[in-house]
Image 1: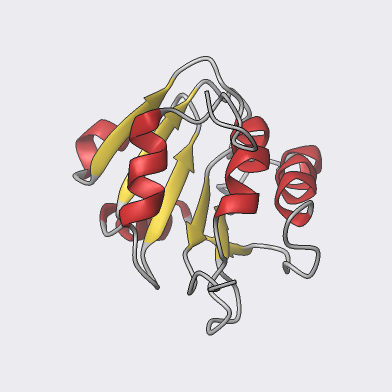
Image 2: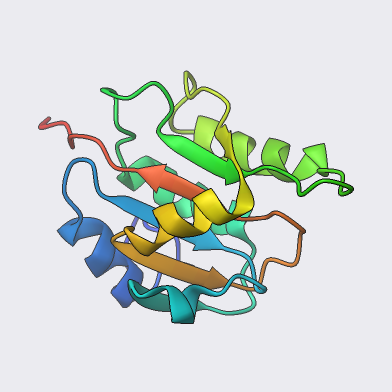
Length: 144
């Protein structure tokens, strides 16, 4: 256990967050996401909800300030409806450390998968919300 770091964050996840560079992306994926078949390294966080993980990660993670939207989520497939509470939960967790964070960019499903293939890592969670995946782009960690 470490002081000030959420016990939900595994040593593997902390190591990945540390090793990521400016512009690298990490996917926090719902339990249905095809993370294992996409190619990047996968970290298991089974049973954990994404908003809880984001609350632990946000104070440790600089969002990229050089892009318009350092957050991205899937848009609904035609005929589906997004549950607005999912994005709201995620943003509440992120904005606790980044109050000026903009709403996420919404991406078509297969475009999201292609972007996820290039991510530094995918964190497979126990999140069951439909369209519950989010990408975070890392910024420059401030020296203070």
